[in-house]
Amino acid sequence: MMERKKIFDTKLIRANDEDGLKDAAKALSEGNVVGFPTETVYGLGADALNPEAVSRIFEAKGRPGDNPLIVHIWDKSQISDLVSEVTPAAQALIDAFMPGPITVIMKKKDVVPSEVTAGLDTVGIRMPSHPLCNEFLKMCGCPVAAPSANLSGSPSPTTALHVMNDMDGYVYAVIDGGLCDVGLESTVVDATGEVPVILRPGAVTSAMIDEALKTHSEYAGALQKGQVPASPGMKYRHYAPGCEVKIITLPENIGQINPHAEDLTDEQKQKLFAIASPFLLEAQKILKDNPAARIGIFAGSEVKELAEMAGDDILSAHLNFCVYGNTCDVEAASHKLFDGLRLLDRQEVDIILAAGFKGDDLEVAYMNRLSKAAGKSGDDVPSKAYEDIDEGMSEIPLDLFENVFTASVLFISDDDGNLGAITEGIFTDLLRRKGPFCSCEDEKVGAELYAESAGLFVIEGTSPDENACKAYSQIMDGTIAHHMARRAEVSVFDANDLILTINDSQAFELISNFPELDGRVFSLSSYMASKGLVMKGEDGSIASVSINDPAGEDLFTYKHTVLALKAWLEILFPYIIKDLGAMRFC
Image 1 (cartoon, one colour):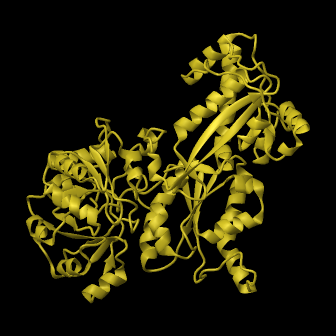
Image 2 (tube, one colour):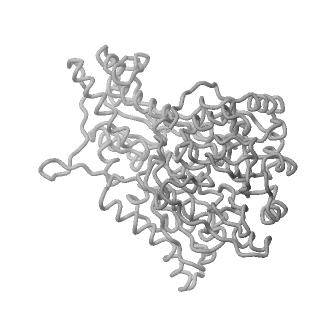
Image 3 (tube, helix red, strand yellow):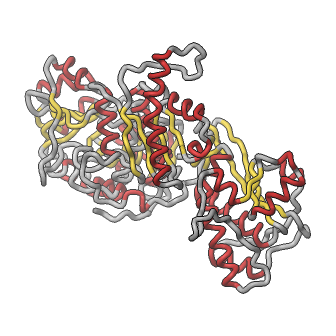
């Protein structure tokens, strides 16, 4: 495996930036690697006839060199320059489906280097139908070898921001062509023989191929040990997020049912239960074994709506949904699959429960990718997967969102001196490192999140003491010296969406003096309990989070306080941002 090295200030090029597109095409033709859109997923392209340039693709992806690449063209006339034989089956596929989401395997000419084909005597040719992609390929003036533009083993990218998250610093540029239409990689068909063999299923289904060729296609069998795959996606465990994925197979022939309809028949109610109950029962089972587990669900809208109707607040606190549309819409699920896996993985869930489909058409391609994500087929990818990706994403321009909302959490201590400054500082650092954020309900709406602090008994304008500043600086590599204490009062409460006190007594004091805040105020202990995160002491009794102000103690005690608050806030962070109506953007 090649070592990844950050050597670029990667450019993000918009679709209407003609000069930027020309610059990226020139850079690719000179041996650099560029991320570009297609109708299936984003590709990571280099000059297919330049072995050194092709090797840079493997380096950027952290990808094994024993997997072939697909060569992308903008015109069918290029095929004769790259392949030595076009069989009748290959020609029929070209005529029927190019341009489009299909790759045709044919015998290669010597001009195609072995670095592209993993030493095989065949090459995959694809002509995308994405208009911007074809414009860019034509600007490049050379055939472009490209795998999907993700870090090897992780979910394929369907937006330019996915590519930037994986490849920022490792490639020359990424072209933003919007969300991919199909969402799954191209169908790959070996057309070197009389009978077409589907090496990788995709949007061009076996039924479509059989109709075009007036024959019966076959699916490739499993690779033998040591065999070089003829197509990407055949050998290694691809498409996997950093967490476990479990498939929940949907019942067949459900159709679309509105859970909120007042005139549901008993049969419709039974069907809704059959759709949603496996997800919710599995989630409950997971939480029974691990009360701190966080669970992602990739499913249709009916599952989310029924989960909300169940009214289980603790269960809901541990669930993060990515809804692709109607539960039984496999096209919508396919379109959203890779985006959904990335989005849920970014919420730092421990497991994703993903809808599985039965069927012989697009269901085959969908289940092929999902099964590999779940680790049910393919070898482990010999790469470090997400380990090399920085925790924070590149800064996201707010104009990428259709709208933006703000939300904030208020931390209350006694005097807003040391504890207030430290807590506000730690949570602000978490927001910086784990951002950007978007709405839980709509990824097109951005979220600007803030943390503030105030005290019940305050001398306004006082600063944290010297040891507090030293301890915070040494642990967090930042400063709280600028913090100025302020009093907790109605205007401060009204400006925040969630109020958390450091200790239980402060929450009791607030609610006693301001009963209208009941339901918005929690101590760290009671907030944890509301999420089912109950701590118990050695004797089995329920323990409370109690963090005392270290004022007057030595530096060691201050550092212990910073570490304790950091640990608690990292645990509570995903629950807090969810209660603020936000999630991590991907």
